Image (cartoon, rainbow, N blue to C red; front, side):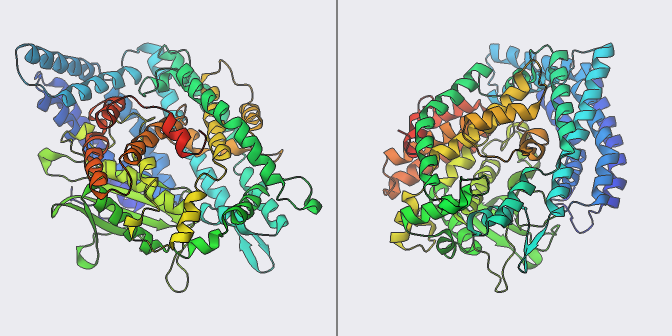
Length: 629
């Protein structure tokens, strides 16, 4: 397998031809490991990694193409091979031989440690997670229970893929024309239109269309929830949320709900005042504030309060300038340099817009990443994300290879893309994820980068980076007066924004912890009303909620807030040391780089946090930074 995928030859036909032989090869290698009697870590974990790496790499590329270059041909590959890959994954996870072997290797390391040998705690954690993973994958099941469990996994995988494709199709299908302008509801255009379009009729059309996307997903939602509950029951958990939390930092559903309730209490009164302030912006002839008015009125209110417009601010955030500023900030904090590779030194890519970069430390390349920046309606999934095409594998000399996907507006006639503040924050956010992948100090593949980072702590590194968007060390040219106004507005409607996330988190947790969910939409309505979220009567937000129904956040959406407590506390350390003190910032940046970014999943996320901060996380920094305390 070459260092970088050859995207020029990676067609649906090529993938369909490669996968059968890769599955056969992986199966044969796994069988050889099962038959091997060795209890050496290297003979088990390393060989198992080598056995399946290429298969999962190619399948990961297939899934990637579905996200960024979606087509009927790629969907056909997914439809054909996903059940086979799910079956193979379960076969490996449920192998009694591999499960027994993982325990035997763990016991051998324990024995060696008792006899005075130095044993890597990272290896112990990897084995512990392998054992837990096998148990949660049903290794202890037999007969009808095992057969049913495996049926559920196959159906869940298909439902998730169909859910995501339905949202992509519905988003691409909607277009509304008025007065010579065509409006869409894709991520790059919808938010901007809702903020800046003065025509209420246009905003209403878009709001209703976006809110009711993919109604066919309603049946899938009911089925997904029911299957997840059945899966948890088979494994002996009271509900799916308990199963989900088994691998996370949060100790219990009660602990999650306490965090939600604490933030609910802290934001309720402030959010009520924010709502009244917004209502005062509505013209009397327009009547009550409607769901399609909120973003528009909020933008007008922000302009009034802070005397600048987002359109004015955007002119200072040209994409190439922001990208260079991000790289300068990373160099300052963590002493790593980012260089773009072009021409003959650039590997192949899946679309002409995609760029490729090397990350260097002390002149030595330590990682690479792709950047796919622009929206492609109908081809690219909405939102923004980071993924990896390969973790660091020290023994093979393999460097981390990461990916960042955004949905920015395509460049204008002058080749320029101007970014709203939220997209600047998104770029910094996703690069925070990428840094944790690329700046790892962990040599073991299975704990390198974001591997084994608990899902409710995986947003710490990303949210932390958002704090540096307006730092002068980025070199992004922004008049000081305007910068002061933007900083003053950072907490604009902070309580409302927080409660929106709480509504999503609580809805998710209830859907996955209730004994029975007769009507998922009714659960959403209850929470949206409680947290003051406006919505149209026909709203079907859940039908587009890919995070929990086709992504990795089921019974885990609370993780954004759980992580935010830790990320705010991390930034609090920099605030306490004085943000204008370069030497202090570099000292703390180096410490953060070696702990949060360097250790990744090699230790429990709370242990890693304690190594950086010297104590457990506290919520005070988050409330203070958001002006809620």
